[in-house]
Image 1 (cartoon, helix red, strand yellow):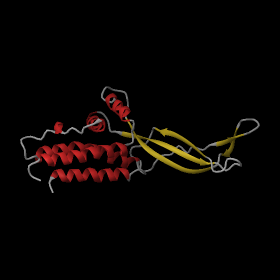
Image 2 (cartoon, one colour; image 1 turned 180 degrees about the horizontal axis):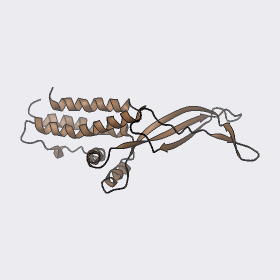
Image 3 (cartoon, helix red, strand yellow; image 1 turned 135 degrees about the horizontal axis):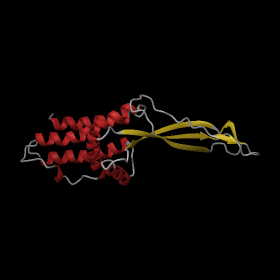
Image 4 (cartoon, one colour; image 1 turned 30 degrees about the vertical axis):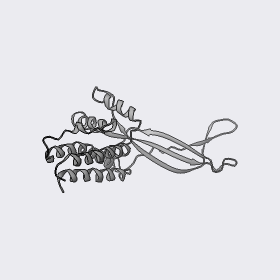
Length: 204
């Protein structure tokens, strides 16, 4: 097994680590950073191991907005700041009041100040309270029972300098900010890139 195969497998393994790190902001951040760095390392080892005249990554026609994003993220993390995340929290409440049984109400919000070194997912502890039917004022009676709380990590890139703005523009074009989604889509392209490399390499 050569270095190209090793780095490709490292990418696959790191994506799995990222997917399984949802309970830890720290491990999510570290896995995404490692995946980002490995995307560049793959092309580097391809250049070193290519048996033809010269490996040219631009000959691969599958590059897209997601792979362009990772290229910018690598440079941004190296020269600007460590890439951090925020958390989108959704809480479901199951109604128990007469006439409303089984109805589920959902509340969601974004937790922006996520400790990047924390092993514990923060929570906004959102609770819905009933209003008094006569006065309309809030009571201390919770609405239904809390059914579930779900979390989604989103990349948190400041828009304070010229180097971060192209990243946010790409994220807007892609329409998703979840590290797991972005890394999964990137790996799909890199798998095609990996096949393209071996089709053009003289020794397999």
